[in-house]
Image 1 (tube, rainbow, N blue to C red):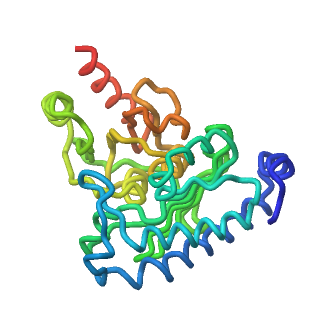
Image 2 (cartoon, rainbow, N blue to C red):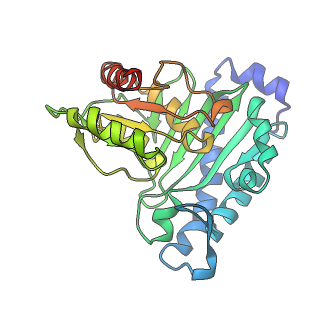
Length: 287
């Protein structure tokens, strides 16, 4: 699978099953290795000095850094011309983010770090492959259950080998997981006053690797994300859209990995649920 970028783009964009299947297998192996070596042995056994603050309510652990190193090495070997954009590398050196505009691997080596550091699930690993700002493929691994989600643009969404069709919860009042953590006080108050009364609110998992599957598997109907970092959302947005759900900016524009500083993203189990929430959210903001 050691292809130069021009050959890879030519072949991959034709969606050859043998290429996408081989890529799924190789990426999954890399993610499982990172989980087995760096993450699972440290679950509920982290020492205090192995947890650090990156910012307000934002942790990083030795497992994040070791997992990213394993994934970066493995993924670079698969596609040498693709840049590596890892969450921890970008935190240490923000110039890494300029690589999001080209052919790149995007790595969240341990999504849900706050949960992991507290010794509780959910947490996961997320990898995406993007080209010219658009996600081409994405993979999400839950290392505790082994659930492996994969998607390639135009080819559907899968858990293992089963093609997934997004389904709503079926509740009379739709179920909503609304992340207000990164909203300012005024926006948080507006959401709780104008949006929340129309939904059954449930706790957010603080883990995109868990939230996107919940939107397709009948657990949650809608979700609002304020922060839209590429390593959190690139894979999940494509996976949800390919499943027949919908994820997009509130103005209905598509999510692009190069716009990760732009706030606001809605995910939903169906386009109808998405548009209903977007209309409410845009009406709130217009008012």
